[in-house]
Every structure is written in C-alpha cells, then in structure tokens.
Length: 174
Ligand code: GNR
Ligand code: NI
Image (cartoon, rainbow, N blue to C red):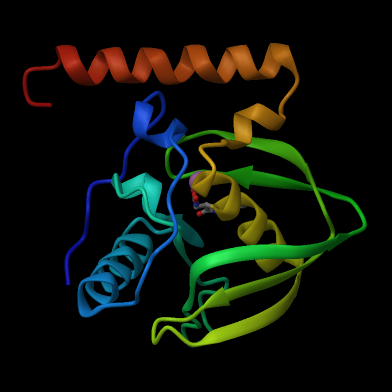
C-alpha cells in the first residue's frame, strides 16, 4: 500500500471526466487500497481517483467518527439513481486545502456501484455519507465544489488556490 500525492486545484486532471472500470482486476484493487490509505493519511472522508491523477470511475468513502471503527466503502462505476430533498452542507475538499464553503446538495441519494470485489451493491445515503457520495461522484465528471458557489465566492477561492500554487512552484524546498 502507498500514500499517493493528492492533486490540488487548478491541476487540469481534476477537470477531466473519468472513464468506467472495465474489470475489477488485482491492479484495480491495489489502486483502491492505495486510495484508501491516501484518504486515511490526509485525513479525509472521501477520495476520488481523479484526485490522485487516475481517470477511472472509482471513489472511496469512510464517514465513521474518530472513536468508531473504520467503515471503508468502495464505489467502482457508481451511479446515483435517485435524489430526494435539499440541504446545505459545509464542505471541504482535499484538492482545496483550507477551503470550506456551504454547498447545496440533495438530502438523500440512492447509489449503485461495484465493491472492491467487483460485486454490485446498492445504498441509501443521508447526512454526511450522502454529501460525500455526491461530492465524489462529481469529481468523476471533472466537477468541483467551487462550481456550486456563487460567482464572487468562486473567484475568491480560485484566487486563493492560484496564490498557493504560485508559492509552491517558486519555493526552493517545494
Ligand atoms: O474530506 C472531505 N471532507 C468533506 C466534508 C464535507 C463534504 C465533503 C467532503 S469530501 C472531502 C474529501 C474530498 O475532497 N473528496 O473528494
Ligand atoms: Ni473533493
């Protein structure tokens, strides 16, 4: 297992749509394991393959609380098949370090996907799990949480991230 580098906005790969996984091979399972390790190391509640530079339709989520046992959920070729209600959630994104913004989401979603063994499963989600499923699923289409902000907030976050990227490329020790 390995902790992979997480891409940060404005990396172009975060804007590219991911393609479906054709077969859940041992290589895919190794990627899934590395994604889980990367998510836990960050730490984050979710991670999409785009965020580690792999354009495949895979994300991992664990919304278990700090004092609870881990509850890793693996989603391969996920599909949100229904959405109900509306809510606003304070979201963060590992590709936008230091940014949290209120985002409008569906309150509940139903999702279909393959698990780490390639076995189909379905899930009803609400609360943080619902938000995470919607957030990660948008990553797979090259969409980002800033796309859901008003124009003024969106521009502020873009400026902040651009400054951060400039600081990284010009610093001696990276
Ligand atoms: O770690 C994360 N926390 C989070 C909090 C509220 C709503 C969504 C998220 S997802 C984020 C990890 C991430 O960037 N996944 O793509
Ligand atoms: Ni994210």
